[in-house]
Amino acid sequence: MTVLIAIFSFLVAIAILVTVHEFGHYWIAKQLGVKILRFSIGFGEPIYLKRFGEDQTEFVIAPIPLGGYVKMLGEVEDGEEIDPKELPRAFSQQKLWKRAAIVAAGPIFNFILAILLYAAVFMAGEQMVKPVIGAVQPESVAAQAGLQAKDEVIAVNNTETKNWEDVLQKTLKVMLNHESTITYVVKNANGYTSSHTMSSDSLSLDDVAEGKLFEHLGFQPFHRVIPAIVAGFTDDSAGQRDGLEIGDEILAIDGQTVVDWQMWADYVKTHPKKEIETQLQRKAEIITLTLVPDEIEGKGRMGVYAQRQPIPEEYLYIEHYNIFQAIVKGTVKTWDMSTLSLQILWKMLTLEVSAKHISGPITIADYAGKTAQISLVAFISFLALISLSLGVINLLPVPVLDGGHLLMYLIEWIKGSPVTDNMQYVMQQVGFALLLGLMFLAIFNDIGRLFG
Image (spheres, rainbow, N blue to C red):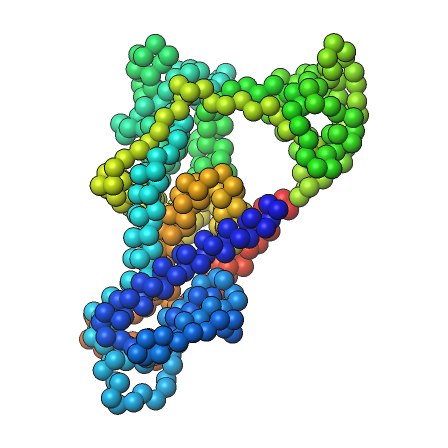
């Protein structure tokens, strides 16, 4: 069921994002008088085709859901004979600024969609978690800087933070800007504020990508400790098969005392198909069982649910804005996330960030499914992020992407004449090779995450 939800959510996300992107090209081209021959969602032979409008434009749905295209009369690569009467409506005959506007419209519409989606999230109201610090590891960077449990981070390097996403993004910006220190301004449980400065030299951008930033600093966001008590089972549960019952409290595993559910879950993950001697309390009795976790995607699974432990109310707040505030917030967030994406891409090119963090369709589908199961607001936020990412990537000056076409138009504007056919051919071949290599790398990384 989880796989089906992921696939369905991925197809919905791609359909929305591709349709908006291609509609940007289509709408601006129509406004500028260019004839549209086909509007396609997906690649390959059409599985659905309908003609509409005076020009009998073909609307097509194709089976390969990894993009789409708008085919216009007189595009350079077509080389078809054009009726002299329709020549003024051919894309190739348009002024330079018109061609550039049509090409740029796709990514711009993706940015507009991201702004509107983020605005919708801000208007709907999103429950956020205040950045309250949990346990601080002794001798860690955070401990040496003076951070303590239950401190609330209210600013990073003089920039206000309201939730953990803010803290992570502001810390990431410090690292991207190669600042040598990070200053956390915190408010303690008594309401007093203080500043704590620590070195960022020991941190890497890979720590952020792998979700280990706070771990390397030596603290974790506050969470309520979940006791290692069995609350339920999945279908065909290994735990139930091996004799666990609802209400059992796990006391020790292979001689190690279990302090909470997370410790037990982490141990089980690393011991697929291995016997685990487990001591537990069942009512007033202490008993010992031998548990053998199933192996699912390379990790151990007992198929057991924990007791739900909600985050305390005082650590939650609702972020809610009116329509005008939401649009401003959505625009700022789209800008911030876009510039952040560009910085990270540059760091990848300069090998400061490992290319193993590049994700492909499998990872995107996984996140689409997970956010869809969390809530509609989470899925909309995911769509906004992917939409702006699509806009950023398409504006890169890589031949065959929109940014590559804009680069050729810039060269044409500078030299006063179009790029030669031979040069366009070479640039397109280079662009195809780069995109193909990037796609293989992304899929390779996806498979590694899936089975790693």
